[in-house]
Image: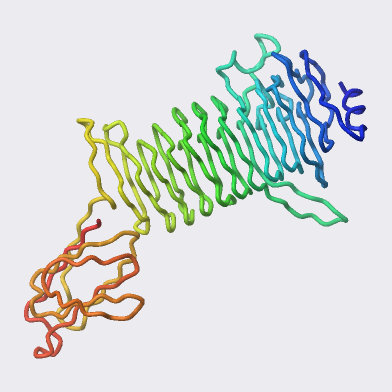
Length: 402
């Protein structure tokens, strides 16, 4: 195999290398060569008895492009081996693999600094005949993670720098029963994970870390993970039409993230900033699911499934706060939440009520009744001039989220 790789990578016009059997080795070659493709037939693949990765496309400090593997070869690695697939410095690669085992502290598929890459129908599953065991007495080679997206360290002229992944597309993954996170996205921009599943993992189904930006999860089916089904920790990350039987979380410190559609048991956004929830169902089984949101989270058209299988609609979670206006100076209240607040004014017939938009006050002419205060707007109440701005009987305000 090493000779085949050396010959293929030396060609001006690289061939398609056909993998038509199972190859067993302790040391695997680097297939780095622009335009070089591997194509597997049937149950062909590689058994790794060594300590390095099994399938390698490694440009180290440089680049390679337009290459990859099709036909989904099977990759069997032992508990001391490296990643099932290791790529670094690839542009526009295409990866189709079925990883049956790798090192216990490794990801089945590790992608470092990839630009516009495609990981298509990847399988990393303990349900496909179990994790690789050379003998029944050996420890099953259960990967730590299914897919790992991360940056690379570059060493050029004695200077170290880092390069993040950009726009990697993971289509229809089947990630099951790894020992940590199923899909782990770190130091990456614009990663898309669409359709498929990440389930039964000891950690999270999907984690998009604080170092991620613009991650997009689309129509994933997530269940039976010991951790969150997905956790969004970065900037401008989004989940659309996903299904989860446990927790969907926008983590503390996350900024500008959203969950649009889909159905979940529990949804948490506490501590995040500028989060948007729209059109989703929570408590999807009608058995006591939780919606716990940060006050700045904007909510629209949320649905909760009730125990009788009916659906109750609302925007922000129902809440009510009663405040009494101070008797003396003008009262000012800023809506710093993410949602419209309805304010009922009781005993306000002596007051002058206004709404401030952008710091500019505008009288409403409405003294007693209900006002809607949008996020960022302010409500202020001034007492009658005849009483020196004081109230004979201070009004009460009832705030309700809507």
